[in-house]
Amino acid sequence: MTDGRRPSVASQALAVFAKDLTAEWRTRTTITAVLLFSVTSLAVVGFAAGAAAMSAEVKAAMLWIVLFFAAFSGLANVWLHEEERGTTLLLRLHACPEAVYLGKLLVNLLTLAAVTSVVAPIYVAMADVRIASPGWFVSVLGAAGFSLAAAATVVGAMIARANARSALYGAVGFPVLLPLLMVAAHGTALCLDPAAPVTALHGTVAGITAFGVGVVAASWLVFPYIWEDM
Amino acid sequence: MTSGEAMRGPTGGRTFPVLLQAAVGALMLAGIVAAFAAEPVRNAAGLPAFTMGGHGAKIVFFHVPCAWLAVLAYLVGAIEAVRYLSTCRRAGRRAQAHDERCAAAMEVGLVFGVLATITGSVFSHNEWGMYWSWDPRQTSIVVVLLLFAAYLVLRGAIEDPMMRARISAAYTLVAVVPAMFMIWVLPRLPQIVTLHGGANQAVVGGGLGPGYRLVMYGLLLPAFVGLFAWLIDLRMRVATVEAGNEDEVVLGGMRVGEVSR
Amino acid sequence: MMSLAVVPVVVWVGLFLYLVALDRRVARAQSHVRREDDL
Image (cartoon, helix red, strand yellow):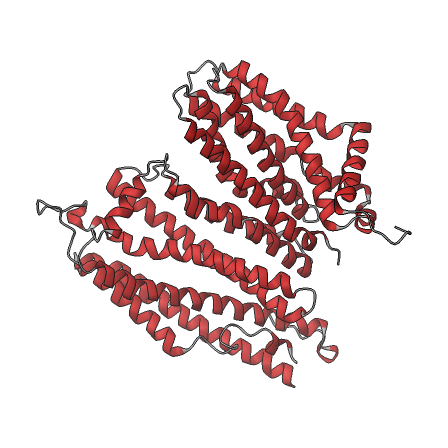
């Protein structure tokens, strides 16, 4: 920045993203913790249900409950690690707020995508579901994963400097995500149903994506206020 | 400018006008009496259309204003959150008033949200046999209720006042997305058949009785809105008093130690 | 049916009187704070 020209928001964001990726790759704490948590929760749900017959809706809900809890077990780490390592101020000085938000969002998107790509196949095998529309299934996973990561990122930023962070994260984050949970579970159930009309599937994915875009837009606008220091 | 002046409530720090207080009291009283005195709804065959001799649906008279007010409370909170964020970098005290008003609106909204859920459950039990029918409308008010509660929990967990105000405002605005989604989008999704939709038709189509419009819109709704404004005003003034007492410790060099809570 | 109305009427009158009393108390506390500010 000594040449008088600030790097663009996009390049700053990519720098934040790359930094976090490098840091995470060295220890791999977050990804392993979240992966282990999600696989274990899947097992918990499976064991608790046992061989009991479940409707498609219940099975669909199961997947999303596991993914939501998995997300809220680890996606706040992008912010918490900065706090714990004392590097928040450094980040504030080197990147504009929008870039920080974008970079952290990208990290969480990648993390959640990685977790979903492991959890979804295990779920399909374990819950013994027949996916009638695989393409739409992947679309629902992608759209809802995007929205989930977006909400988890912004809520994580909000609670990063509060008291009782671990319980607070879930308590504050889940009400925001309840509508997403409903529509994602409904969408997944539609994917399991061979007779589901395409318009319904399309509408559901569109609704989920709209939710995510809305959350990202709102987060983009308010993040500078969350991020700024006293 | 003293701290007391800087944080007036919507009516300038004086009490919510006595005239309006009396109006709220009278309107609500009249509304309650009128609701119970109203003719029970009869269907085409002349038989009561709802349970309890047609009177079972009358809780709707109270349920609808409560639900509307919960939504209104969220809108007020969101507007105050925007106003807070747009002024927080310059005008310290004025911004603080917006934050307090947002918090007041969310608290009152929680109360009305709980009332709406309870009255809705009673109606659901009377008419459809179950307290909770997983109807999207019914769940949507619970989500909004949880958003209010989450706001208050978040507020309670941050000690520094300015950070608390900023983050509360930010949360209100981010949560606008799910709130508006639940209130307006979800109940209208075509593939979701709702019991509540049927009930909506009954109310909107005048099915509750000939005079219901007058009772609900003319008496109870204004009474509830007045009650809402009064509660916000009271809550704001309590915050002013508390802030005034805090300032004695912070500002009053001559009065340190004279805090009266 | 009007006999059922007694309960909500009593509840409302009680709540209303409570709010009025609270209003008076808060107003008194406010003027107390204001008077001290003006001292």
